[in-house]
Amino acid sequence: MALILNVSTSAAATVTNGTAVHTGPNVVSVNPANNAIVLKSQTVKVTFNSTIKAKSPWIELKNGNTTISTSYAINGSTLSVIPTTTLTTGVRYTLSIHTNSISDLTGNGNSLYSTSFTVSPITLAQMKDGQTRAQTFFNNNQRLPNYVSYGTTEIPIAQFQKIIATQGLKINTKITASAQSKESLAAIMESAAGFGYSHDAHTAAAMEAIGAGDCWAMSDYLYLKMTAAGITTRIIEYATAYSANHRSVQYLENGKWINVPYKQYGVNMMFWNTQSTGAIIRCS
Image 1 (spheres, rainbow, N blue to C red):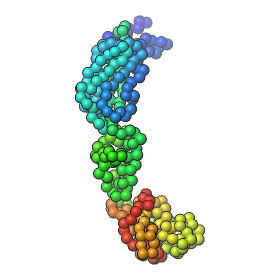
Image 2: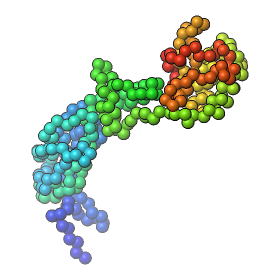
Image 3: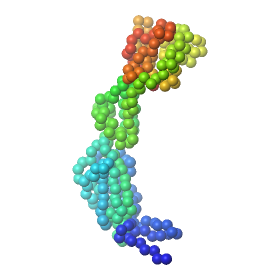
Image 4: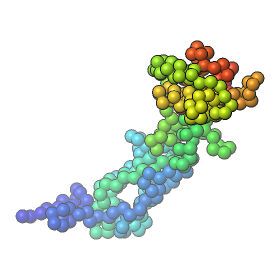
């Protein structure tokens, strides 16, 4: 049986035990590395395992479906792909070196090779840190911050979202509405009414053990019970006539923070809220 290889239309290959093995130049390294994040526009250098030359060059650098203008140069075993304009910050780029674009010195062409990288003013670790801070801000305020800061550098939130999207990251901006269970809230508040006030317990566990606790204990109790019931909850702290650090609980409904109805369910008045704003201690 005759085996015919058409090396004019495909990368060269040999056959070993019935399996085609590519014999053209193979990539051994690329700079920037695949999926790397670089701080500024730069030339992409692809190094092969042999000296190379141009064959039928089809080399594409793309941002999504948009092709970026480039030139190329070959030096020994390295192909340099040079953007003719500065690459945009906050964008993910993909370089494709199509089949038979280059060859080794005997004419064996390459196989298709693709690699991607992102141009960004911040690292992946900084992206994740900023995402966490922006998400916390949104959870507490039901809106995005105007910018995400890194020292004295401030990145506008719209640009920041584009940057982190290149790594599959995003800020969850879904506002919890009144899908929260009113029956669960009522049952929790009814159980809370069974506890007295005492300076001897400062956590939910301690309050449940002795049947009484302070405002910190009650807030801890309500927070844990309501969060477990799927109700978005937060604890706030502020000064009152009786305490410099009184705590009370609020839940999220239709994008607004509502004070839990202590009085309605006969909860001891020492636990009641006296205002609706304060330092946020915890937020689910």
